Image 1 (cartoon, rainbow, N blue to C red):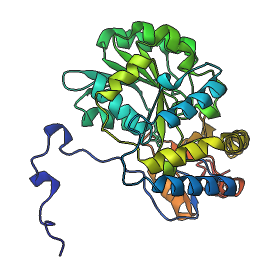
Image 2 (image 1 turned 30 degrees about the vertical axis):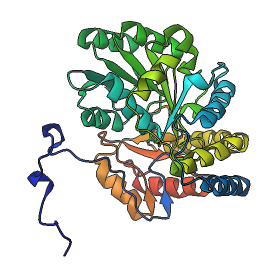
Image 3 (image 1 turned 60 degrees about the vertical axis):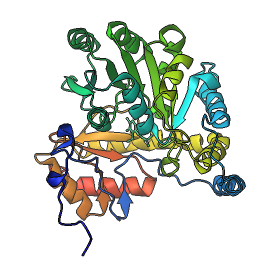
Image 4 (image 1 turned 45 degrees about the horizontal axis):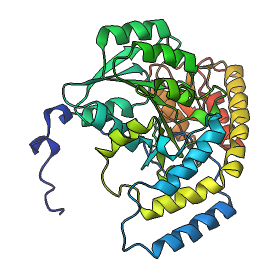
Length: 369
Ligand code: PMP
């Protein structure tokens, strides 16, 4: 038997706030069609794979040494990408990088949240925001969205004014609902916020909305923009997220980051992936087209969909969403039950994956059409 297996979590001297909590747990199941974690369905090109392999091989010559602690070359490449993608000229001093944007968000809460402080988010939104808040002992304040899941900016401003959180999360496009905000709406939220506003733009490349990066020159003491290579960049397995912010914000994060957090292998692989940005991002337009097709087909089948600016769609309405989720799984299609009554979330996949999903949806549509 496994040594130590007679102890349960309840037996451990765990922090009180963690007692009885559940860990983040999107199921990782081996199914024909996995469209549940908002990845890019297009695998990397052979040229990208070769470039990553060559770069990692070269980096491996120096594995006995610690990596560049400040990842300057990678941040320089990211700055060039962000400048092109957003039209806002940024430099290496505006960029910070970590192992996925989850680590960026955690570093932000380590620096700006913590015991005696609070973070506010507009739910439903990304489930890791409250989990990272709890992990850093930051009190979580759940503020509502409208019934259609869009963000009522006036209500948001009123709630921020009333609750005075140290950190406000704004996810745009919002996961799992799909709507995005205009930078002017984020400006209004920032004007009310007494602390920082974290704009989580994990899905920015799928949206036509301008990036909140445009606000940094004016509001850089408040607003920071978190992004990732996990979604549009098709680099979820490589683990690379980044922050675009005023240089002082990045100085603040240096106070909490672990030294050498980004391995030489990660830095080399991410730089290689960035060299192929044009070809990778060419697939984004195709995913957006497929999203339009999937939305139209779901509506044809009598289902309702929430307007999405991202690579996923929240749809319903099911009497029992979890039973419907199981029905999709029984048909080989793994989607996401995000815990919103009557609704499920599907990630846009390759055309044949979307076809398989739509065939299952036709079976499961509650109207029976
Ligand atoms: N923010 C949002 C809104 C997300 O949906 C995700 C991934 N599900 C992340 C951040 C984190 O992604 P990663 O750590 O892979 O960058």
